[in-house]
Length: 64
Image 1 (tube, rainbow, N blue to C red):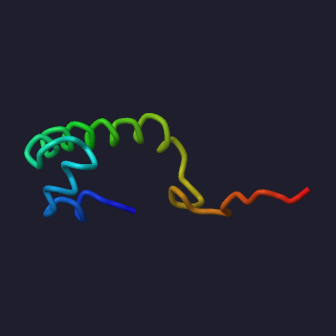
Image 2: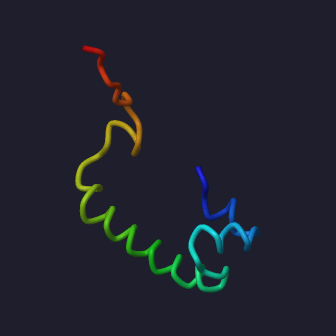
Image 3: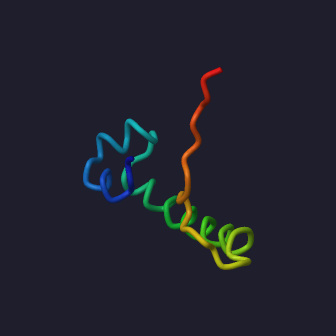
């Protein structure tokens, strides 16, 4: 999985994935990071979690 840390020092990869330059992406990244934290606080952190996000059994298709 790609992350900000992996593409931060690769401007051509970042440009091809997002259509944005590194400086444009960094400006948006700060806003999106804050919005994501606000979303998590409002919707997901109401009760203690038994597992972290993405934990647990992964879905599998059954053969009929």
